[in-house]
Length: 155
Image 1 (cartoon, rainbow, N blue to C red):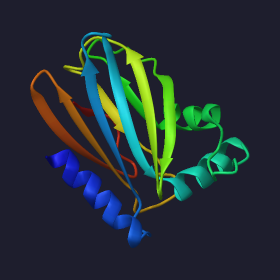
Image 2: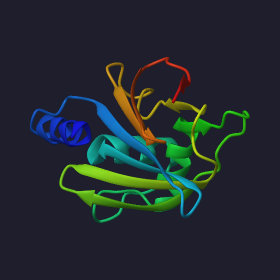
Image 3: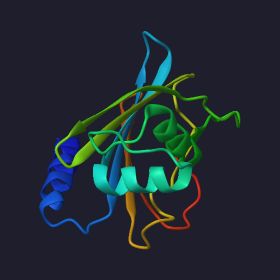
Image 4: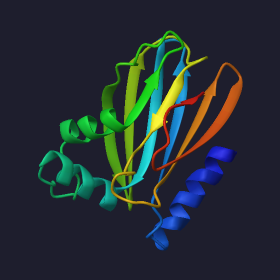
């Protein structure tokens, strides 16, 4: 239910957009032994910053190519295991849904217990950027809030 509330808040904020916010859901897929991240961002802000940072052109849908989006996200959204190893995320797609862009990342990894996450998505672009990370694993739920300058936080 809280995930639905966060998604509703993000959708409602779209109408009053100068809100600068992202929401990431971090989960664990035991069958694939991988951590899965689903990231929601405002497509216009995200696309403009990715294009500016990477020099990538925007497509007809106003979204940069996958490789440019992945490079941008991988540099700003990180998860480090309890053993201190950075998770090697792979791109699993992106799709635009109205004003939002939904980005998917996947990393082969152990369950994220003891891991640390950092979300600096668009923090360099907007002083008021807020990044919410929700993690569900091992029967535990955790919600973290990141603002400009925040470092990694424990899941």
